[in-house]
Amino acid sequence: MVDRMEKRRVTIVATLRNSIGAVVIVGIALAALVVLSLLLSETPMKTLRYFFLGPVQNTYYFGNMLNMAIPLIFGGLGVSLAMRSGSFNLGGEGQLYSGAFVATISALALARWGSAGVVVALLLGTCTGGLLAALSGVLRMKWNTSELITSFLVSNAVVLVVSYLIAGPFMDPATNLIATRMIPESFRFTRILEPSNLSSALFAAVIAVLVVHLYLYKTKSGYELRLFGLNPRFAAYGGIRTKWYQVWPMFLSGAFYGLGGGMAIFGTYYACMKEFSTGMGWNGLAVALIARHRPGAVIPAALFFAYIESGARNAMLHSDVTFEIASIVQSVVFFLVTSAVLQKIGSVQRRSV
Image (cartoon, rainbow, N blue to C red):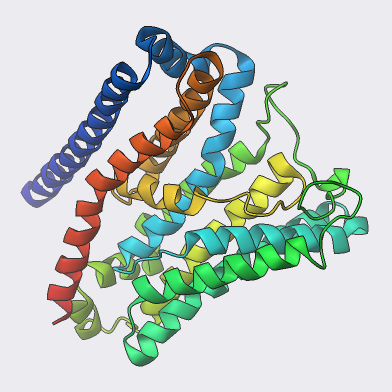
């Protein structure tokens, strides 16, 4: 009984510490926003009003804000799974982009399959992102190469290849956009909160959070993954397949990115446009860091990032500031949370020695 109470106390303290850290980061970011508005805008109060209240002023803006959070939730889950295992996936941009492209092409090829085609297309996009990330895990397992570097380099190469395919052989000649053909209407998710772009993909994102939480804390594989991330040597002594957990979490990480890309196409864009996903991968990384790689905290972290972007768009439309104010605030968040990555890398490296 005493041990159980002590364990519960430690868990509560750790949760409070993580929550306080996230609140501090959010507070500093919002303070930076206020300072920037005072410095850059001739009407700072108007700018701040549209920034803070714009995303929730009506159904259209609120729905679009929620819609922006969907790919960030999937990306944040992917990064969280990798970090739980002591791995680091910096290839989210390419994994999401390629997953979206493959899901789009699959939907066009399986137009007559109906609901089964939706599932198959999303699975193919999911596996595409997963395999790209797993490549970095295999390289780490075989030759001890850093997945930080390999995932980043592979992602950059994949982005170029996919952009070439979209602008070349798969481009829709009937439109002025650099994009593929539109997916069939039967593949498009149901819209909710119209006239916003929010779709039923939001429910899939929430379900994904629950699935990841159950996997990490209620399954043997999830326990082994977390143990390997905490101490690889101890995990090896305990008989855990350490080579497997250098590859499997990376596959899961990329798979969630790829699934997020497919959800974005089927729920919002309906065609894979060139470089539509720019920034989504990195924002997914920041979401996971703010959430301290806890699945349940990914949703509020993703909503925070979506709120910043939506607020910046409203402020840009109704005041004299540019959209780059969102990039500056997001950069502040990145600067603050990067220390968590460096600490994590150092701790894992020390445990591996």
